[in-house]
Image (tube, rainbow, N blue to C red):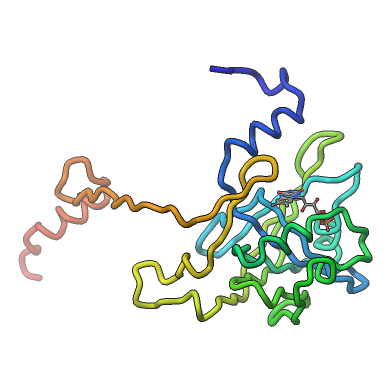
Length: 231
Ligand SMILES: Cc1cc2nc3c(=O)[nH]c(=O)nc-3n(C[C@H](O)[C@H](O)[C@H](O)COP(=O)(O)O)c2cc1C
């Protein structure tokens, strides 16, 4: 078993260990706009939904050459963004959008994806994406040490776009993953599909079970108690 302190490994090695083991990672395909109105679109896999209520999404953008990337700088200037989920159908375009383009180059044009106006935010949305979350910035945290700064962006979803073709209200999970076909990022330049899945039913710990959560046991005991006399 390799066992080591963070301080004992070069950052580049730690990065490869991290992105090779914390897998698969979902991909936030994020559109933003600059103060001048230039559209930007880039993928980020240090990404997840971090709370359900309120619905918050978070992703991290490391600095490049000692400066914020276009995405984090744009969010500083205009605190709104749209997170798109990457299905197999737009995987190639997502990859084209990750190039180191200058701030005045639109990755919409470079990738061939179609910008349409956001509904609740003044940021272009990717028409081809089957899921888009329109977000307002909640926190822009600057993390890290000198020479390795990262922006951790937390946004609240204020408007949702979910393609009708991936919704089945009657299903146990109403989202049809086999139609959305979301991809995950692995290490280096590898990705995975979400076609090989399995189910695990959760254990059911009933309130009468001594291992149950105390508040549930107390609620059950209160139900079993006879009503107070005269009431
Ligand atoms: C699948 C994928 C995931 C990526 N994840 C991240 C990430 O989590 N953080 C990051 O800073 N860059 C990430 N990148 C690289 C950025 O997309 C790339 O630096 C891009 O040029 C940033 O664009 P911007 O300067 O327009 O913001 C990723 C690239 C790909 C293809």
